[in-house]
Amino acid sequence: MAEENEQQSSEAATAGKAANGKRPHRSQKVGAVVSDKMTKTVTVRVDRLVRHTKYRRYVRRTSKFMAHDELGATVGDKVRIVETRPMSARKRWRVIEIVQKAAK
Image (tube, rainbow, N blue to C red; front, side, top):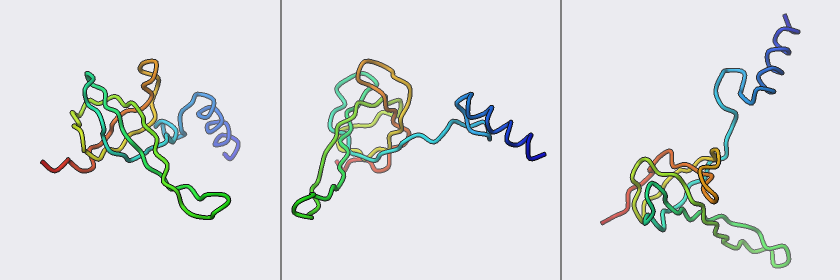
């Protein structure tokens, strides 16, 4: 019985899917939409805190990601993005949720 479970989990791992049939864990990030001028694409700014090696102080670092947007997010919205297959030369993320709409 244990051998069957090991065999099933190894087969699932080689197939690129988890044992329960869902996709493996994909990285998620939360950020703010800074541009929505492209069709079905938004640019998302993600901030993170990094500790400075010499001064031991936290410094804010910013990264921008282009994400596929089927939900219609607008500038200022806080969104959750997840890694996905390459959709274009620079677009490898997808908007899965609008966490907070922008105040108007």
